[in-house]
Length: 437
Image (cartoon, rainbow, N blue to C red; front, side):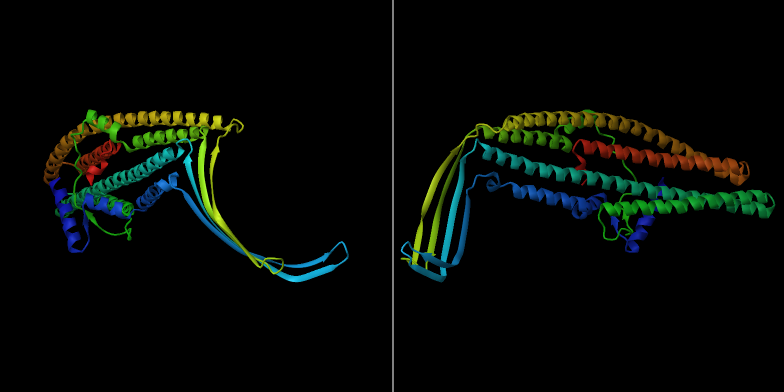
């Protein structure tokens, strides 16, 4: 493991010398939150809900309209009186100019305005929670991608080490063959093993590139193929998470539960807005009218009429085909549905928390077991290499020992990564995922 960390350090140091960046987990998260398109879209949607939260949109403020019109008529007139006299006129041009200013204000509509304002406030908070959910999901994906990249690089280092072992074995077999103490068959078999390890290493390079591209995509990098290294060289799992504390945090801070609770509150305001239609409504209107007329015939050449108007309207719906009662019943059912949805989400989250924590606890035990296995496999490999150099161990037996050593390393990396994923999921469920940032 020390040689693995040393090789990782050398790779990182070489990356710095070549101008390739080295990113910490916090830097990766920061770049993702700043540039990721899903986060930018979520923030735009949140900004819309903030813009909608105004007293004017709720209906507290009056409305004020101004309108104006200018028009006219051009008429030809032919008239015959009872005594037979004829009069005619042509091209008579009359004009009309009007202007209106109207102020309308709802004085009372069954508390609908106040409930609408409260509903807009809840929608604004819901928009913030939806953005928070997007952010938390992205952060968890970046963390998972970050540690997957570390895992694949460590696996690559393991394969490099395996290749060095196979190369050393080929060298030993070649020397034995030249000295006459070995066979050509052993040399060819060692060459086959070396070629197989080289092929596996080549495939692992591609896996590393894919992991890096996926992480660049989450960070919305302009160059998805940008080469970089991580500041961390190993996967460290937090083994101090307690179920009871996670459970309490989940019930209070889980974003999905907060969204479900907020939806219940919004449905309750929808119900109040609908029931407000059972009350009478009072509207106040006032305005100013201006009218100017011009005539080319008749007794007057022009006429102007202007003045104020005002009125108070009182209304009450008596019957609308039982639609109001139906809307109230449907709104009440919607509240029940949202409450059931909350309980469903809560139950699912509790089940996920328990299942993931059980896996997390079991993985911690497996990490300790695999660390012991790796110590044993390392010691076994050292002994096998010495015996092989002395000719006391066959090539097949050495390959088995070598494979056991590499398998032990791979299993430890795999269980460390799985444990880290469980840790990330537990923090995500309990609403504590941003502690990584």
